[in-house]
Image (cartoon, rainbow, N blue to C red; front, side, top):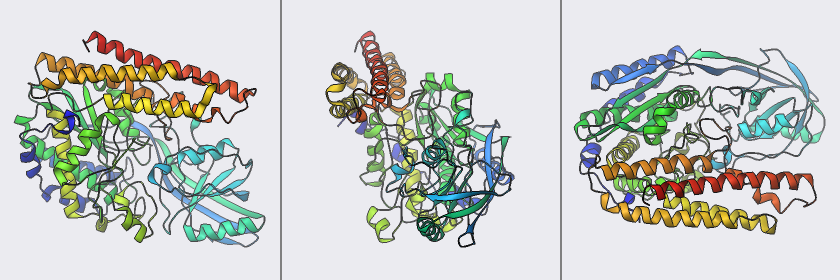
Length: 591
């Protein structure tokens, strides 16, 4: 066990004991009934309420209002024209191509892609071999960016998705992360996208499987660049105030959005209130941000913040923590909470110390306002507590992306009964302890030796898959050598775990950890490089080398094989360059 799992701050229990439900539950009740579309008047009322509460508690804050690309679905129509006329209930996701309410006609074809079997599959990439050019494609699942992009690339005229439940879940279908730039604007969806519920979808699928089906459809979206709120509070540290932990969550919602994410907004407010009460013991700063544009702009608010304050984040952000869907009904366990390898020990320890529970997680998804990986900022948590898998099975619930596993997620049913007072109180304490521990730990609570070990496992898996066609031997040796260097670094700095935050030796050690994150996080979580934003589809470990997993299945004489080999060679160079840069940095620092 690393020291990050064992270090405790003497004031942490005092901080968590100060957590109350008065202010957060009042916010949850206030938000019940507010449909907080990004940039809407209702959302602004929610923001104004939080601002009033922050002022009342004496928490410094600033409101930004950037103009960003927002897409608000207004209505969708889907009708079967032949062989059996029928009007179906339909919705369209944010960023779908709008027909401005005018009907289009097309021939329907069913292409199976399957429902997501786990939360990780919701955001996965999809490969599609079917010829769907000029057809309206019917398929299963959420209208996720990966599926929509795959259908669009194959020439689909439009896409219709069958929801896994009787409610149609709202969502967003673009792969563009945040507002588009010149590199990403070409990925903007160019086809209308619709969704139907499970029962009507099953009827439509059976009809399509039986023979030719003609449909007509229409979508209407209010899309454009509009001002949205980004509210940021800051509780300044007393010793090293320029360094900060970033805690954040989204304020916009689908429908009333109580479990996703009014409970998260309430958590952020209460953490701010408690931290300002104990600011005399806070060593580094904590910034708490409420983003708009999460639901209707593919993380537009957090992406804008990452872009606008990139230099400050690069130089001073210790780590960031997302807060989405805490305190929900029946959410009694901590599974799939997600963490980067370097933060796993502290993430687990905080949950155990605060709740007495063990937790499970894994590699963060390309979701949840994870807008800072390209800068190279470590993170832990994305979602919070959830329902036990046994209970999900008993209720016949399917995977959703929030609400503690409740299938009210992204539907009209996400109302007040989805929140749970006791669970919310527990989860607020977890987040309060997490930011307090991260801000006050003399050495940043990160263990990059775990990242080197992760890299070695990933490289070995890719090497086994590639076989003799491509060698990662020297790259594996680089990862092993980095692990050894890091072991020496952490052995040497272990004596500093109880030193003062402003001890020059502590500052130097933390600067090393910051620079390690800026090198190792991007190479493990991005393709686009620093200060650019990857597409909103899942990113595999060491993504530049992931094609190694398919190399052995390709004909060695084919163009696909040669192109893949060229790609892998360049990817290997990037990974080796990062590993060696990390080693040089450690050597220069005396590691």
